[in-house]
Image (cartoon, rainbow, N blue to C red):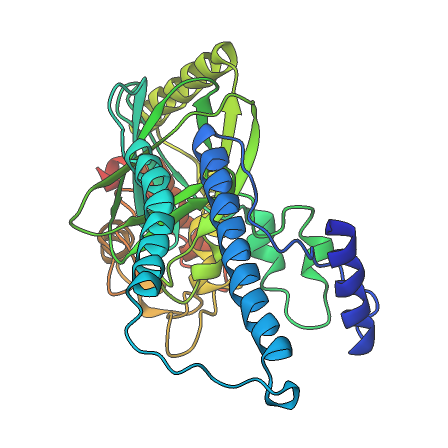
Length: 373
């Protein structure tokens, strides 16, 4: 059947002149890697075949009646009214079909919403256009954004091939993936910081809205280590398409090592808050942060998007009082989020210094982490 569908899809593509299409012509749901996703897939297939059986019976009776009781064969329409037997049959049979569908569907839904007895809890907050992951048990907190390479390639303009230059997972890679242990029940708490987002990894078999002011939850247990990718599926703003999700499932021992590494990074960030950096160090560090956190709106060259995102190149903020510049970055303004929640004092100092001494600006001053604090 699958080979037949691929053949038909290829034939259709050739008819319309598309001879080198690379799309996947799979027409069914993916089965996924979790017990929930496999159960949902099984329920979907069961309902599909129920619908196929109903269609076969209904159309079979219809075509039989048309062929064998047509006027040309001398058929005469029966004249009857209110056949109790027929009415009972066409009421009972649909009722039994609905019960046979509702019973397993209800069980699946109850299992999907059963988030108790979890081994760990992660709070997921949607921002325009990144995700924040807070490990409530291990006290880890970080943001996950579109990786710098994809972000650069998507702004290349016409005449370039993003799919080639962006790599195998163009627009589906991030700088900091979510990491969870294999074989553990992980509970997620979802909310939004600005607008409604939706967290979706197809392999897990479900998706959840992240709504400002509300908390929704879900759970996952993945037995097979690997990397699983998804996207925000809510139209959350101009760069909605550039808000991917990457989940790395690691064996328990590897996961614990990753946790320790994250804690060391957090401790390092705290130590950097009291450190004095040179201007060269700040500019180099600020360039990396700008490409990850700022270039999506203000563009790689700092010229922004006219009418939507202001330019940094030659702007009054970047050339004006440095305290005002720090305040805008830390507290946000308009569509710009408050980066005090996303970046450490050292990172804010670095990106402010970079903006004031690059992108066509040459103010000459610099900020230090202590200025942010």
